[in-house]
Length: 182
Image 1: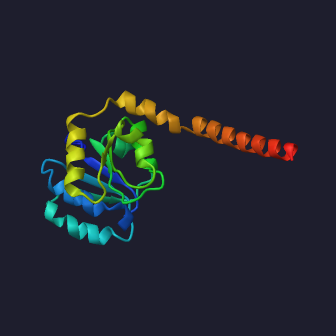
Image 2: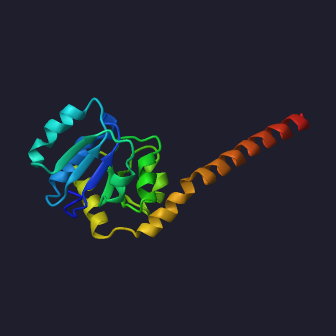
Image 3: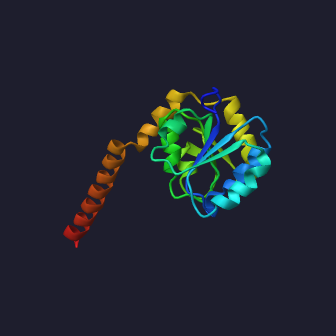
């Protein structure tokens, strides 16, 4: 698909129920011009492959890859349809590539990473029509790559390490102050 100049959607993650790739497949059915590449593996793979058969060749299950970056760099958008998400590193990875992102507004990191939807569409959890709408809106009006790349910098190693050390320093200083005043 990439060689043909197409830009498919990409999902990257473990194929488990909490990632809710089934909702993404149902959303794809509502977007007949789009194709989807699924990167990752897991216990839900066989069930998802069977569920994707009705999409007639518009879904490619690649399996686990050592580096998602080349896939993200050439994607129309990354879609993360999770029911819950700890942080969502793949969202930051896609943004660092300048790739538009769509995620569900699930408990966890997506709302924080996407700044309440300013950096990527947030769709309702478990809602294929809502997810399809968010994908279509993102593809019709993608954010500039430079804006996404700049936003991803706040999660870079240097900035995260600096914030972590500041939090430790604050915790230690606060604890020391309590001991001294006791």
